[in-house]
Image 1 (cartoon, rainbow, N blue to C red):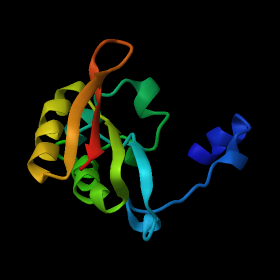
Image 2: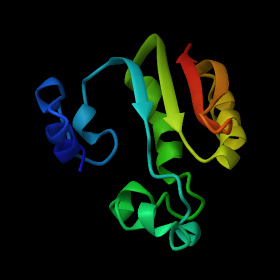
Image 3: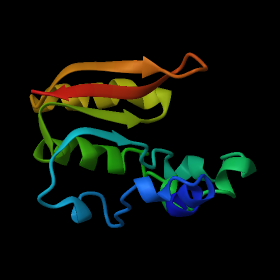
Amino acid sequence: VAKRNAEAHKVSDKITFLQGDLWGPLQNLRFDLILSNPPYVSTSEYTDLPPEVRDHEPKIALDGREDGLHCIKEIIKFAPGFIDSGGWLMIEMAPIQTGTVMTMMDRMNAYTGIKRVKDYSRSYRVVVAQMA
């Protein structure tokens, strides 16, 4: 889907696409910034999504499993191995998840400057942290 969108907007020649399960295709790579929009809808909420969302995205892109945090937990756990010291991690999620995610990051002692950012509708939607 991402590749088709990039081709439609004539930017695919500027993007390297890697496909795999979370960190798999990124082995031995280091980054200054990782920005993620992982699946964060719980399985029970998935069927209640509006059709314009649910019917136009692959289920794997939306369904974050039981609590909606499956991928986010994995990202938080393993990101320090892929982001250089002083680099940044930014994760989009449901507003109700931001407090839990900030607590998870704080408990790891790998992140500093943990904060949440509001979207255009003035809801907290992104958690940002810097690598210690």
